[in-house]
Length: 234
Image (cartoon, rainbow, N blue to C red; front, side, top):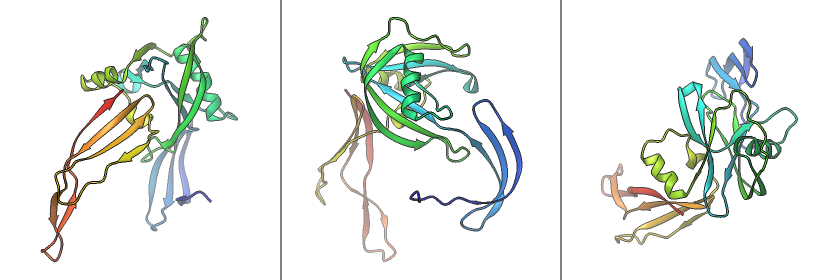
């Protein structure tokens, strides 16, 4: 049994559409809390995503046209997991097709639900290193309008701050190591949390503990943190 797995009870399937890469359905269901209703769901086989990092510490990204948002997004290379294909196979194929690079070193980062409010799609994220530029990369598919972009962590941060349209690179590269410094109670010492993401760190600075409100008794204050900000560190 998968931890946290609680499938709803299907009462009636009201609509089903089978597409080229995904299916769409509307079903009457009973949820674990006994609530009943009609819910729409996109059924997707899942996707695989790579965070490619060169030996110089630069990310290999793609700037790709997406008709759904009527524009180009800065993304990590990714693709749909085909039938009878493991995510590891998918991403090794996709990184070559989309970027023209071949990775000789792979590490699993994480698996996450992309849009659980309306889709069952999971993304399998991998760190790709020891990159080789292919002399003759595979051709793009006809509907792929892609530009290859190499960016350092600082350049990526600056692009996002400047308003570059993108998917969420922090969430997609969600493999991290956390190290914390304890906050001394009643002092102004700050706590620093670093999340290692591929070749950079996301640094979250938290200032001293500050009162957030009163308890029911009214004579004790709950303590919390106020976040000052975040930044990427190469």
